[in-house]
Length: 403
Ligand SMILES: NC(=O)c1ccc[n+]([C@@H]2O[C@H](COP(=O)([O-])OP(=O)(O)OC[C@H]3O[C@@H](n4cnc5c(N)ncnc54)[C@H](OP(=O)(O)O)[C@@H]3O)[C@@H](O)[C@H]2O)c1
Image (cartoon, rainbow, N blue to C red):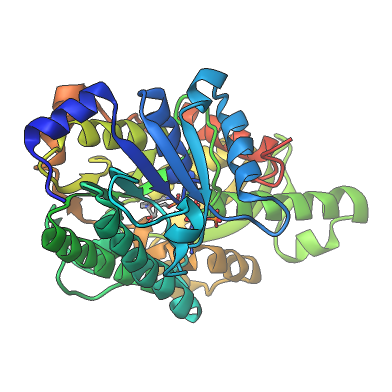
């Protein structure tokens, strides 16, 4: 349903839009839900029950985690449903599919797996599930669809990645491919139905730069976690079993109290990893939601990617490690990978294409919004790294997130 500019502006100012957020139990979806609620909007979260916890309790637990006060919680509803089910809306919203049920949809639900062996599930969620949500958008009288996508719909494109539609291309994995297909699907459906569409394309999101808090421990966290895991194994070997296994791999305790772990990590001479903290991601999302009334494609990225060497140095400093070095591929011609390096390498495999990214992401659409709202991506400095990783360790890398 096409809404006039004026009516849309009025609804936004008066906070009379009813938002539906899919994927509201996820990392981005929960943060966006909270930001919408705190901005005074009414939000229904679409959530699934997990094996042990009903959907409603999962959302309540998240609301506690975010410290939402009672007043704000009154604007939050929960609907249980699975977007793979074409009848999800009827089940979730008691839908008679009549118009007026939902005004704006923020679609965050997604399968974010990269593995080819998970292709069927990833396609089902990111293409089939999206189609089901778009069908509901058309039936429900929704007038604005907010599609949370990824900067990596650019696939294997090099150079400048445009803030524009990606019609085709080569992709690094099924996630990128299905997210790109999803954007085109959303564009065509929204055009057909006269629904405004914003596509938000974040790069790689980590924890809150101010508090270190996060709900997900993948991407940036995974290789650091692997190094800490190895450290703990070999520290235990040294302290409790005489350190025979450690010494076979050249691992030893140094006089400065640091553990020496000889691991070379292959990185390119240029490029880095495009990281944004969740606080910035959400601030930019909200600013675009507010300003981008026409609809469009927006990159939410960092114009200063971080070199892997920097992350390695931060990790060594925080976790008292020595011996981990970055190097070019030629280093392995002279001395092939040792067992420890081969083991560690497997943790990096899926992330390698994102570790030495040489690309620039266009921000011609996002830039005016950032400027108007005075938003600058926080520096990924040692303090931010330390806050995020300390939170990760405190919470057992996510295993003790909730009391
Ligand atoms: N995290 C990043 O670094 C990043 C970067 C760029 C873009 N993005 C995009 O941001 C969006 C959210 O990603 P995320 O990192 O927040 O992922 P996430 O934490 O894994 O959250 C995914 C959400 O989708 C829900 N979901 C998956 N399949 C569903 C289904 N069949 N029916 C209903 N809900 C379903 C999940 O529900 P359950 O909790 O029940 O599993 C969860 O709430 C995705 O579109 C992703 O492409 C993320």
